[in-house]
Length: 124
Image (cartoon, rainbow, N blue to C red; front, side, top):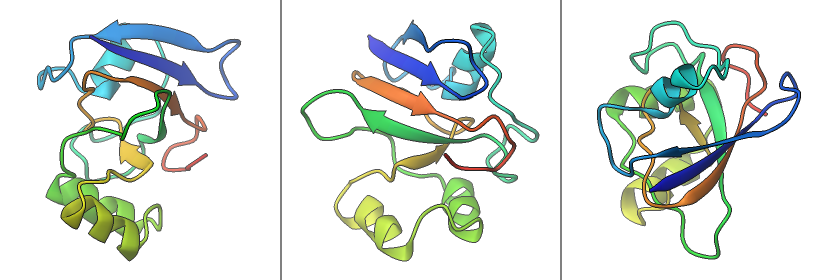
């Protein structure tokens, strides 16, 4: 089970939800929509960058996540949300970057904080 806390300046209070870890049919964006959490989005396909979120582990263990998709990689670099070094760390050292696209992120068995600005494509 994954524990995900959503936080945004636009929300009255943080919201914590639970998800089935590794369920590839339910991205972070789908989970947010299901729980009426208004992460901005447009394409839902990893190309526009409007659903960018900042992911922080709330546990004392290495962050987990699936590898960045090619679309996510391209979009995050193009938008200046991750550096080439962070991209290298993600690919070579299996260290996921803090910024991810909610439409591409699949929760794992971990406790995370997901922060978003509420503005499409704007990191927090």
